[in-house]
Image (cartoon, rainbow, N blue to C red; front, side, top):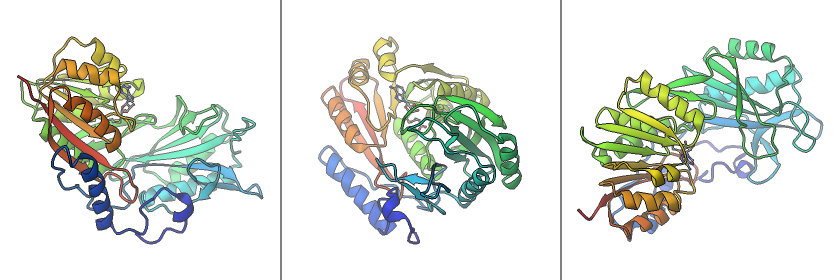
Amino acid sequence: MKKCPVSEICGACTMQGISYAKQLEIKQEKVDKLFGKLGKVEKITGADDPLHYRNKSQISFGYDEKRNVIAGNYVESTHILVPIDECQLVDSETNRIFRTVISLVRKYRISIFDENRMTGTLRHVLVRNNHDSSEIMVVLVTGGIRFNNKERFINDLVKKHPNVTAVVQNINSRRTSMILGSRNINLYGKGYITDELCGCSFKISAGSFYQINHAQTEKLYRKAIKLAGIGKKDSVLDTYCGIGTIGIIAGGSAGSVTGVELNRQAVKDAVSNAKYNKVSNISFVAEDAGRYMDGCREKYDVVIMDPPRNGSDYRFLASLAKMKPGRIVYISCNPDTQYRDVKYLLKRGYAIKHIQPFDMFPYTDHIENIVLMAKTEK
Ligand code: SAH
């Protein structure tokens, strides 16, 4: 990585200046330290290319002291905006699109949203691309519905970047550090992009979760599915399933799959993704995963769980321990909370069979980790 001019203030790449080999060593050590006393930690699976991997990124808008429009990243937990010209974690086309968007905001004098007064238009712009950038979505996050000159703005944008296949306006009128609000309006295209992953195709909407490192996700999913040891008679529960990726990819080898996910838009995407990929033995439930588990009468052979950073909750884990599936595959983007949850299951009739970290987020200190657990009692 060439030295990034804003690395010290931006703060997103916490591992700037450290060789990639050393980054992997640091991450391996962290997981060894946590899980080493519970079992053997396999070697971390690193990235072939540790740069330009992010398929989703966003910039926020503000004014400098002369009221010129500026755009970039907020320094964590502050209101300081660091202008970014070229981020090395995203691909070059995404960087070019951000530059075009900033110039169009200036050209059409789009006002910037002021969170204190709750006035103005534009707050953030989010760009999502598929693995070869043949489909790109631009999400314009605004404080209200009003967006002057939006037709001309979009015309200019798609003319300059024909691979932008979807433009969505997202309305976020709350006083919040969350980027997206709940309402999306399609301004151009179908409101989603599609990406190929492990031989399947996935529809991704503006607000749905999708893993941000395509090459590493293929390695992670293949390993998780292999570890799950799914057979033709097995019923599989894919919890925290997002747009249904893991369950749909695994669907061909399973008897049946159920996906559970809280975000309704993601579940809608999951249902149409299953149809699109002709996977007919899968169904989805839009519900809190713990609540679903609590009320569940079904016995699953395999449970895959992939919760957000804060891990799973007591309700989920207690019901899981009662359900007693033969195998649990726990994928986590936060090994600390995963360790806490795994310890709980270790006391309730499970043993660890495999631990393997993956580097999904080079140049940052985030670590992804898979733990396979198997039931010890008959
Ligand atoms: N397995 C998917 C998504 C993992 S991210 C993938 O690999 O793409 C975690 C997902 O959990 C998100 O889609 C989020 O919307 C969902 N989620 C968060 N809290 C939840 C809850 N309490 N119950 C069910 N799903 C939840």
